[in-house]
Length: 305
Image (cartoon, helix red, strand yellow):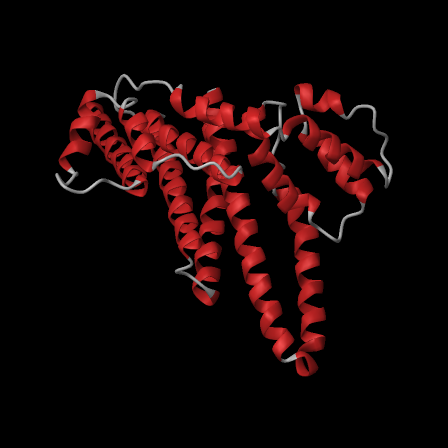
């Protein structure tokens, strides 16, 4: 059973690394059109396969940490997939406008297919959730807006139902006063924005989130990947808020969270005269996590003989 758990964890690590790599390519604008479609198609297939693995993992090891990791991957995947879909749709629309006379019927048919697919897929895509913590607001807002808020094939009644089911704790209590009707979805969303989109508090929470990440006592697959994931989430949120922290400072803070053995390996990769980039640190953490997983699996096999 232990070997099976390690295998699933390794697949999770690989999937997170691929999501990060594709997000970086999207940010750099180095992948377009058919190449982007192929990449997101393959990533989607792997993510949906991993959903089945996660169900198995929940049975083998019902750890809250596993479910937290799964929720993190899920949020990142759907946010990335939505961004790519918007990018591809925008490109398709631009091409169709150039050939409006001949492509008008194609546009309508394509839109109909997209709408139909979305209605079928929605139950398969669990909604992001929000518990009322400021540091989780931007991630939730972006994911929910992409999956539900921006859709034209849903009524405001539908959207309010989805919003209520996505909120927990304090956030849920804030909109209990709203009935299910076509007017109050907008009001409910505006109330949440007023309550949680407070720039000063958000910036402080995300900076604190990076500074106060736990120090790793030893190299573990979960520990290294969670460190990289958490830092990226905080940095992305700060960028959204228009706040940039120098890469050197972030790398310094990450280095302070690493166990001695991992820090020594990181130092070996560095050039004396060149400052490392933050992307280099992320890649190092993910690769090291994969190596740790392989090493642990090999050790487990030897012990079982």
